[in-house]
Image (cartoon, rainbow, N blue to C red; front, side, top):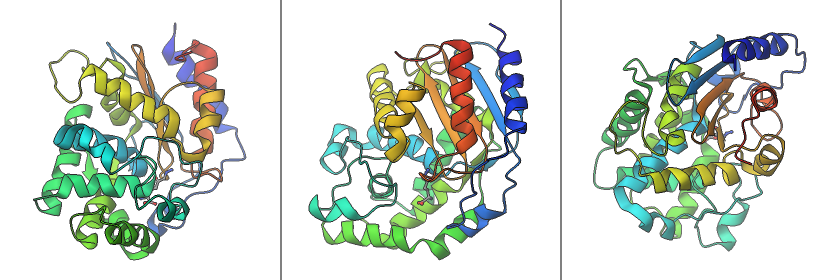
Length: 306
Ligand code: DON
């Protein structure tokens, strides 16, 4: 299979797409990103990463960081995490508050904002916000094998200024006893982790730990056990694209995680990790063209878990 030709073909199709969605503007700093950008990187379990388009431009990974944070939180507290966060799709928007009151401040899953804020609390407990952040950033650097991965301070500051909805979610959970550390410190970790910037190449490389049954290609690593990799993939499949997770599973059929920066990381277990990026979003807050690119990719390769 000529992955380079497939990636090139996807890029040229995406270039001619006129309906590119809308950039996220509720985080003002993200509204400046050029809608015409599009990149894709395919990291097979072994061998060279294949890239096309703007695959080396770093973008804000936003909610994709929730996957790396969850990986670390599970390592820190194991299955006790599930007493504080559920494992069900929410069927509501990523920043919805509606279920929290009926469900005693226990978020439906670790990928919606309240769930990820609980995960940040777990990473913070007993240490300083910068230590918790270093953990997430360090994991992104180690998995992508690239020390240049960084936190975009402007994006973090922008979200800190406008993050009242996340503050509301966090305060509600604090009132229900589901946050242990002070709200402003938990959100400091959360906003900064969301502001990590990575390119498609770096993200696809990083995702290999989930497609190779927990082992990054060519190295010993204890980031996740094979069992945990399987569970993270299951959560991505059921909850990774929020209220569009069912539609993505139907159309594409692989575990994936999106972010409002326009990135989507998809895992084809045992085969490859793939990242696509275009900053224009659909009404669910997922990248319109990155999703289309995944559809093209599975059509051309036959990759799917089903
Ligand atoms: O908390 C927020 O709203 C953002 N930092 C992350 C949201 C996000 O990426 C949702 N993804 N599609």
